[in-house]
Image (cartoon, rainbow, N blue to C red; front, side, top):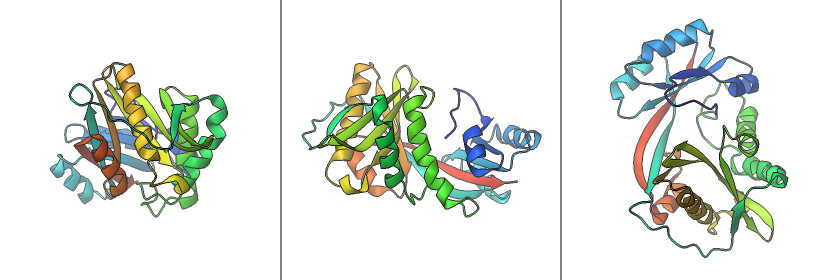
Length: 246
């Protein structure tokens, strides 16, 4: 959940380190930078490296496995081409609007419920405290409301004036917006709240003159992927997430 500047390969993650009580780094690993990432971890006395590797880099992934990296999840990205596709209508029950500061507590509550026990790469690691893994998503949602480095926009979905879902957006580059964190309260799932948020996210991208919106989830999270496909998103690329304990 640490932010990373364009072109950065590896960095110390202050947020993860404080949460789990060990020195944590995050990296995007490729064959050409693998040695550099390992050198950084040695120099910075990193205890845990969270490393993403493109599924196209199979030889690199196999090398990582041979060195004790453990596969924790597979992240799939979907993309919507705003120049080629029309944004679909949404006539669901949920009303979607922009976040206001007073929403922060409700967003934290929705995130805590939506991601309780969510089997992402944190929960997949038996060496990490499950309770702290749960806390991570709620904390991420709150930081999205308070830091433009984490999210440039937050949308909330309401039913009967109660927040039941949220979507955080980040401008990756002038023409691309990413849906970073997406959560719907358990009691509001399956009634179109997720679709309403995604459609509103696309409309926001259009207003910013973005050419595409991307969003990601675990490969096992099939229900959400079905929603995205029905809206018009298409598979784009994917990454393995490895953990390496030193």
